[in-house]
Length: 75
Image (cartoon, rainbow, N blue to C red; front, side, top):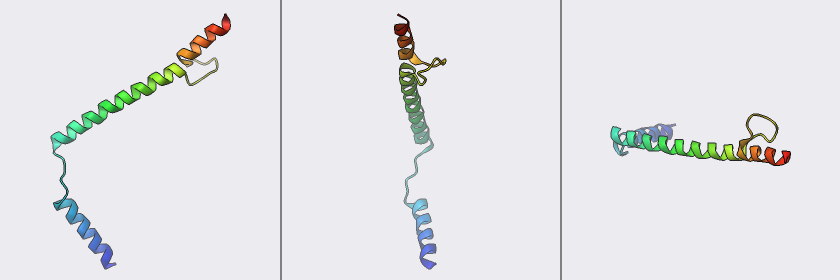
């Protein structure tokens, strides 16, 4: 039990005294980078989903290829 208490005390001391925490400006910059990267990634996924479609049936969402195939089948 003494080892666990010693481990917790040492971990707390290391987090308080040895870890270099980012400044508020660094946190804001990192958050903006993550937000922009997430938006770009979501846009890429949306475009891929729109192009390939998620429903091959007669539903609303067929994507561009589904629309093209329905035109080709009618010809």
